[in-house]
Structures are given as C-alpha cells and as structure tokens.
Length: 184
View: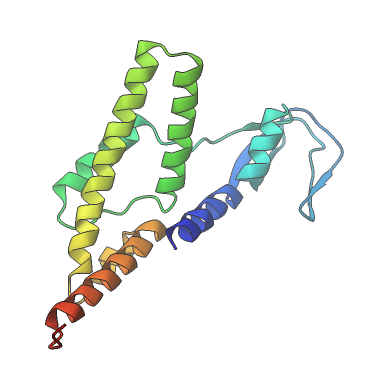
C-alpha cells in the first residue's frame, strides 16, 4: 500500500508544472499528446517537471524556479515541528522533494567524496531523519485518538495520511484482539 501511495505522490510531483525559459528555439514538439511551443528564445513557459528536466538536460530550456529543499529549509521545518504539539503544515510534495535532494547529494558525494560534501550529506540526512521521527511520533499519537481534529489531517502529506490509516487499522485490530473474551 505504501509503495502505491509513494509512487502516486512522485507521479503527482513529477507532473506538476514548473517555469522554464527557452534557450534553444525549435519547432514545436509533441510529448504525450501535448504540443509544446519552443519557437522563441527567452520565452517563458510552464512544463511538467519531468519534461522540463529532460529538455534542460538537452540544453533546450533553462529551469527558472528550483524548488529543491535545502538544509536551511529542513532546519526551519525541524525547528517549527519540535515546538508545536500538533503537526505543522508542510509542502504536500515534501517527501518527493526530500528524496530528490537526497539522491542528488548522494550522487555528488559519490562522484567527488570531498569531506565537505560528505558532511553536508550527513547533516541533511540527520536533519531529515529528525523531522520524520518527530512527525511519525505525532502521527502515532493521532492514530490512537478517538477523533481527529480536521487541522491535523490538513497538515499531513498524502504519505503521512496513508501511514495514519495503516497505524489506526493495526491499533484497532490489536485492541479488538486484546478485548476478545474468547480463550484459546
């Protein structure tokens, strides 16, 4: 179940639109049934993330807005999360962005294992793990509540909602079994 939710989240993230600038004008191209006009250099357009990344690799477009998560972003999220009793609202695409950034940092550290890069990767991983641990504790707490306030669900990502459902099911099944009057 989690794999399906994670895949759906990645698909949603990779199909979200981002701004690009055309760097190498070309005749319109067709991708996935959609016609993309690349006719004028300097023209700004919006493309699905996956298309923009491929065209940027080919030097056809330049991505205008990167929404990568930085260590500073993670530290800010961690600071807020540790000071609030309830889950704080985070970007719905937090986990796909986190995974993409970790992948890039790991690739950089593998290509060039400089102590600074390895240290940056380690700090990023530790901070990300701290955020996840903090949020999972709050999700587990929410799973044992009789009724959830709507703001708790609104602050969760799709991956966290799936985790909440799974934990809630498991806790309910365990409670029923513990309260069963049958003897084995």
